[in-house]
Image 1 (cartoon, one colour):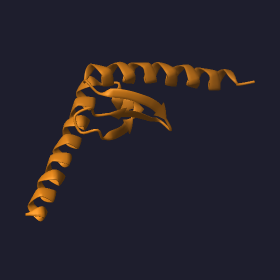
Image 2 (cartoon, rainbow, N blue to C red):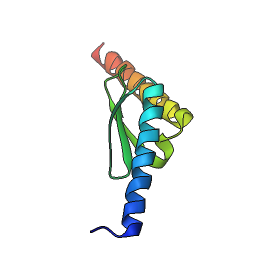
Image 3 (cartoon, helix red, strand yellow):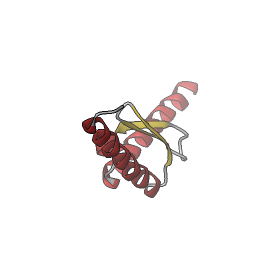
Image 4 (cartoon, rainbow, N blue to C red):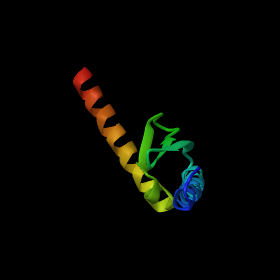
Length: 86
């Protein structure tokens, strides 16, 4: 049987996970799961699976920034690939 502290931690993580899920969905991304203290989600534009600390993922603006950084990296990579193909 779990200790009261362990039960409290589990409830807190469940609440954080739900808030993170809401923030991710609000940003237009697809929620996957919370695991190992991370929020996992997919960017529908690039198809990339992203992860960020659960405690940061509850903030819509931080999720948007994370997605924007990923898209910028994706675009730079795609541009490099096109240049190398020429």
